[in-house]
Image 1 (cartoon, rainbow, N blue to C red):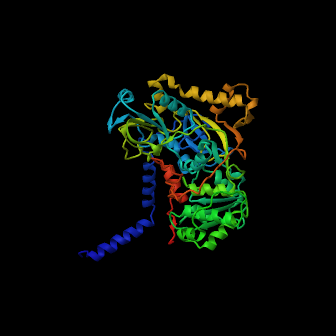
Image 2: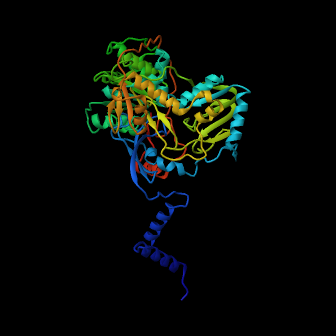
Image 3: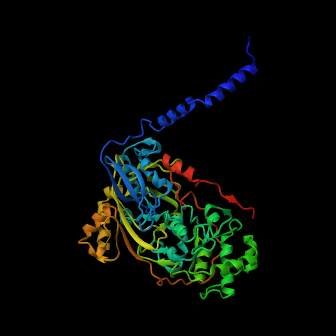
Length: 555
């Protein structure tokens, strides 16, 4: 009998069906799964004592507290620190898998010059040469650190421009800096005392600011309630996760957030729903409503809802002067439940967006997000722990990876409470060098990182304010010396200062600001996208559905 084509299909189908009911394919899949997780380049933890250490995450400015599980001196697991004053036990997906990052295939191991391997000696000689030939800029991605002190000192001594890449939260506070003269590093949102929050595109439940801060507030005071103690009003042209869970989603036309903020302010002043006064928007409510796609009556109803339960504060996804002016009208600037002044920075560096034209060289610290590229014609020296893909840098210089270097962790952006922590190295860094050390080797007068951290501890100790949260909570006044404070911080304690107090912010708004383009948050943190992801973070992404596409409106 000669088998026909139909017989072959039937035989193949029967074979496939039979295979499904045998353990063979499932055993093969299991073996492949095991093999794929045990490639030769993945380090296997050595057998040895298991211990737990406290530290702070340094992957972004939001300063989450971490418990680090160590086996034989190597980190093998991370979890949140429940008693942390800001993150309150939460970590983002990247934080949970960050201990895997140092073995990522994209890890930078050698200095690169335009794609070819080079040496630290060549990189240093090239930067020295550039330093003597023309203007340079040094870009910091996380100001307020001890490393920032070294970078700024070097810039000042050599006539360089010290610039900073700002987070979306810092950009949102920018208008208040321009109107009050107080730097964004000294401003924060008092969310804990707010009762109504109107968010203009800020992804409050999708990774805004420090993970855990707002989500904890929302879960405790709003989740599952039709009449929550904390009302969240989300103004957004897409139904994001935050919009879906908000008390109210206001579906506006794309790019019309400034117009809605202006319309709300006009209703509040015309109907005398607020006591604060200010310049009136030039356009009428009807004109502004036409830009938003909302009826004027809807905007009037929303304005009344804002003041039903105060204090109320407005938050934008980026630098939006109209939203900031709405806070002035609401009386939220310098008030409990609004924007408060806290301790911190005394001045703000030049924003990286202001750099332009031709320069001899630009040095970019490893804290600067990979996607930030200064608009200058210059030789670029970029420090990074991982190669994030396409870059215009002439020199790629390997920086220490996660938990590989001593660093301090200042107050995260948008926080109303001043905090300070120190992350000590828990792993050895081989062949890497941070920007602060690189510059200090060129000019020792810039100082060392450790000396700068100890100087900050001295300042905190002599001020005598606040206390330590950690293994042994105690007030700063109870410590015997600044060295004891440094030691406690190195063991995972977090210093917490006093919360911002009402008053002290005079915001003299002369005229209503013009419309501005709304910034869209990039990634699952506000404007900060990781250059690489460890496998665990990618898995958490998928299983928690954090990458879901928002439902766009038809307005």
